[in-house]
Image 1: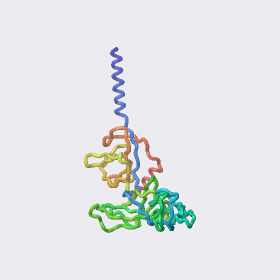
Image 2: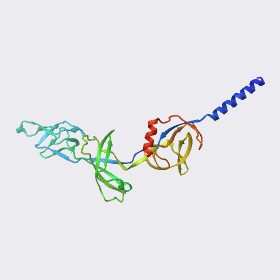
Image 3: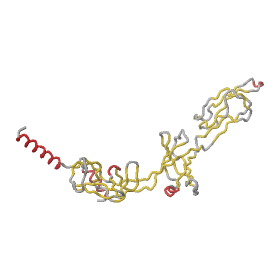
Image 4: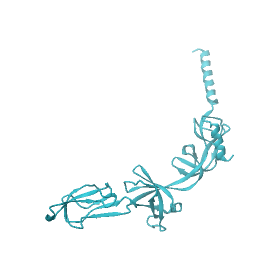
Length: 294
């Protein structure tokens, strides 16, 4: 390799390195904006039927056929059991036992072929209306729950609107919880098919700024975000508030309308100049100014 060629290679390497060093880091930003922040409280819940109907036999008979299974939904007057009168005087007349209410089969107390007497218990139906939803509330959360507070019951990939009906003033010393009773909202027509679920209640509603958790950096016990001001990076200490799924409330440190770095192409030193990949449009800037009260 000639001396000229070696010098040319060194020159090109140096030039490329200088270009790399001179190239600005790129960032994507989000505009801090105020929105409603609500803490979500989750509790295991148990549904208790509001009415249990005990179905009994009116005559001595033989259970010929059971038409339902445990857990089946039934309407009022649905045929539950086919009976055959056991008294020869009635010429083995067939009898149909029908449901007195709408609900679900909670218990079957006979089997096919069994002989039963008058007044013997056949099955139990859990009524479809008037259910109670019971839950236990930890004492630390009691101050955030009140009567008539609305929420959501989640079970079997479905959700149902509910309302807090009452809260016990007594705390169980063994569990550290107080009992609460929840009812389905008046305009909630659907009913769940199971007996166990989760109740979600919203508490501590206020206006605040939420940003993705990955936009926050941690150093010891301190938390920081990086914001862009006049195309330069500024590292700012912040105080965190509520955590809402994958976002965190910034209680102190930034104001609505400021540009917060969400992602960067590399390490960002304080004061370094950057290129914003997603600069806001004019209407977004105006919205952020109104949000900030400018």
